[in-house]
Image (cartoon, rainbow, N blue to C red; front, side, top):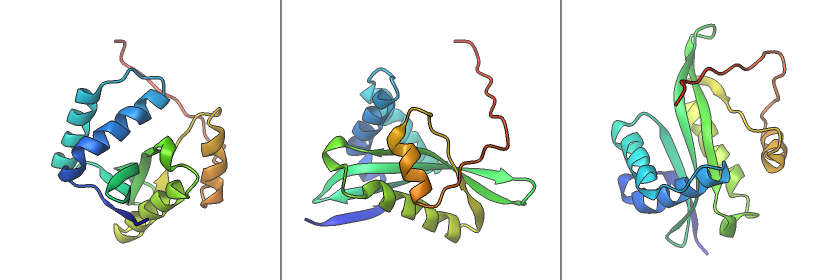
Length: 150
């Protein structure tokens, strides 16, 4: 069994859109394959995110997507690890950790000060995974959100 992690390309669009749709459904969104394909296609074409995939025998098993931000106080780039997903068939193989390691390489090679993420309190797997790969829980600030009414 051959496993590979690499940066996603437009050639991955069909499989990546399927994974992205599964990811969204995990977060209780309605399936929308065409919307997922359009969204991922735009990210790849506009190069406004970095997406890494894990591939096993030619089939994508998971992905991580990061968005660039900036830290004014540190005067450096800062990455938002926004999406991490491994298909249920590929779980238990350490692919989440491998994808996070790819994200760490991106942080180091882009001269950034690091990355951050948020996850739900009920995401037991994520809340065990992230500290195990070096993330520290940060309780010193309040997180606020403002949304446009739909």
